Amino acid sequence: MLIGSTASGKSALALQAARRLGDVELVSADSMQVYRGMDIGTAKPTPAEQAGVPHHLIDVAEPSDDFNVARFQVEAAEVIAGIEARGHRALVVGGTGLYVRAVVDGLTMPGEWPGLKADLERQPVEELHRRLAELDPLAASRIEPGNVRRLVRALEVTLGSGRPFSSFGPGLGAYPPTTRFRLVGVWLPRTVLAERIAARYRAQLADGFLDEVRRLGDVMSRTARQALGYRELLDHLAGAGTLDEAVEAAVRRTREFARRQQAWFRRDPRITWLGSAENPVDLLPALLGDWSLE
Image 1 (cartoon, rainbow, N blue to C red):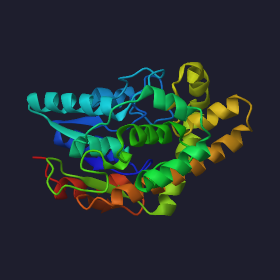
Image 2: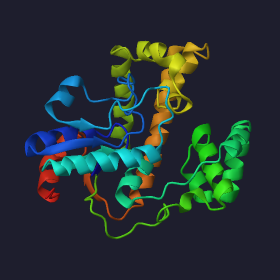
Image 3: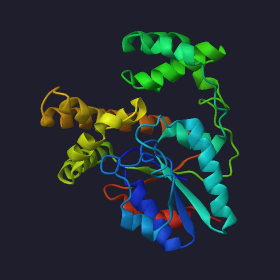
Image 4: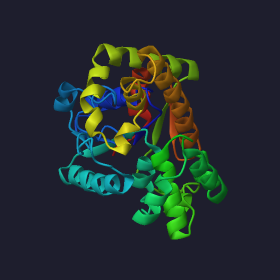
C-alpha cells in the first residue's frame, strides 16, 4: 500500500512501480476519484495511464451518489480478491485516511440513523463541531470544522450508537501490529508540497477544471461537492467571489488538508517513509528495493 498526502506524487510513483513490476494492478483509495466525470479536479489517472496498467475503484459511482467508506470497504475487498485470484498483486494507492484504515484494519462500519441525521443536518456547522468536540474529541480533531457531511456522520454515529465515532473497528487511535499489507508513505518537504498544490491547480484550470465543475454542478451530491477545489469553484459559479479568490481559497484549504493527512498518517507506526527533496518519482529505486511485494 502506497500512501501520502494530496499532490505528493504517490500516484505517479505507483504507476511507475506497476509498469516496472508487470504483475501489479492499482487500487485507488481516493474518496473522490470514485466519481464519474470528476476527472480533472481529482487528478484522476488519464485514459492512457489506465489502459497501460489496470486501475480499480475509479469511476464506480455517479456524482449524484453519496459514496461512503462502507461501500468502499466492500468493493475494495472484492477487487483485491479478484486481483489475487488472477495471480497478480494489488497495490493500493491513496490518501483518504479512513479508506486506507478500512482496508488495512477491517474497521467495523457503524450503522445509520436517518431521523437523527436529518435533525443534525438542520443545525449550524459551528454547533455540530462544538458538540462533536465535547462527545468525541479525537474524531473532532480529524475533521475539517467546515465539513458538514463528516461532522453530521460522526455525530449521527456517536449519538445513535452511544459510542464515539472514533472507536469503531480497532479504534482509530489503535494500530494493530499485524496486517497483511505492507505500508509505505511518500514524504515531501512542506514548502515543496505547498508549491506542488498551487502548481497543480494552475494546470487543472488550464485543462478545463472550471468547465468540468460547471458541467457537473447541478447533479453533484453533498459528498461530491465537498471535494477539494470543486467546492470553491462551485461557490464562484454561484456568484461568491472572483475566480482568483476561489483558487486562492482552494489552494489554502488543500494545503491545510495535506497537513492533516500528514498528521493522520504519521501516527501509524507501521508505515515506512520514503522521502524526496523534490521529485517523488526519484523514490522508485528505494520503493522497489525496500518494499517486497511478494
